[in-house]
Image (tube, rainbow, N blue to C red; front, side, top):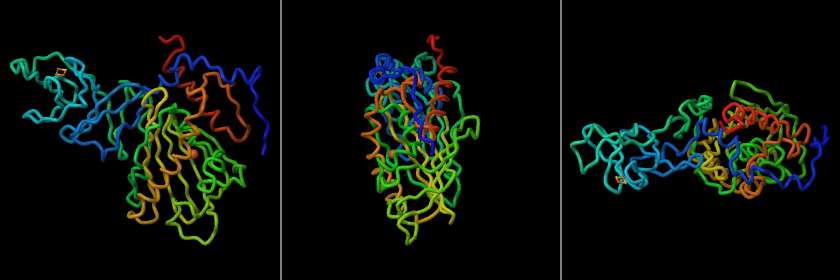
Amino acid sequence: MDTDWALAKNQSLADLRLNRMDAEAEGRIYQALRHFWHPVIYSQELTDSPERVWLCGEQLVAVRLDGEAVVLNDMCAHRGTALSLGKVVASDDGEAIQCPYHGWRYAGDGRCVLAPQRPDLAGKLRARVKSHNVVERYGMVWVCLADDPHFPLPEFPQFEDPSYDWVAVPSTSWDHTFAVRRTENYTDPAHLAFVHDGYLGDSRQPAIPEYEVSQTAHNVLQMRLAEPCFEPASAGKNKSIVTESEFLEVMKTWDCFMPLTVLLRVFDTEGNDYCLFFHPTPTSATTIRNFTIGARNFGSASTIFDEIAGWNKIVYEQDEPIVSSQRPEQLPEDLSMEMYLAGVDTFSLRYRKWLLELADELVPADGS
Ligand code: FES
Ligand SMILES: [Fe+2]
């Protein structure tokens, strides 16, 4: 393998510790994320009990009204109380969310339908809260803060294939991570031997297999191993695969639905297919919530929770201190601020370039 370092010109260690985006706190890539779909809660967790969720620094309330997923700004138009502290109430016109302070009621489209102190004004009130674009799919409730999502929802056909079982991995929040760095971590084969030694990789074999990177759709950057790699057969995720070998020979593909969703597939020549459909929702510029649906076409539904959810809990706990320690927290806009190992960091470089193109398109540099 070619191991030349791709060193930036005029780069010094001092430069590496400085980044104007640290001071600015929010970079253009982060602002661009408002134009895409992000899951905010699992479908199975969304009930008629309002839940506070966060997306790109916005405090939102998610709730089910008449069975439909609804996401509103979590701020009553009257005196700014959090609607997530309220409750769902029913009327002849359907369910509404009721503010806990003075009881104003809001329909799913955000209209205030009743101020109980002046019932005579019902239907004439101008008050409303912002209602956001919502789609419920793949066991998750997705929100786009922009009126016109830049890309369609990512695709996860295995979720809808009856030969696969699926499970929602309990979501976890990370307090010091920019979402983009987490997706980059999820698509990074070179860290497996170190961060997941004995779990997903082997520190005795740090070289990675050859892989190819290509754009496979207008919104997908794919990384595909060009040859099989080896995973410890004893790994919890592989418990349902019967083998006498120490290692399983598997192929892997990562479909990155720009800018954040990853569909990772690990499959073998026997037809066993293991999928993780992952999205690190940017709850703010430096915090994320990890959402993952795992699916597989082997093993029993009765063990899928332990073997996928339990397993990934361990794996994610190995990643968190590493990814949360990365500085600057925001991805540098200047690609030469970090280094790229030729033949290894190819995906990372392509991914970053595409992110910057999206930022250029959606968030012009002059801020207009
Ligand atoms: S603050 Fe919500 S009804 Fe008054
Ligand atoms: Fe990892």
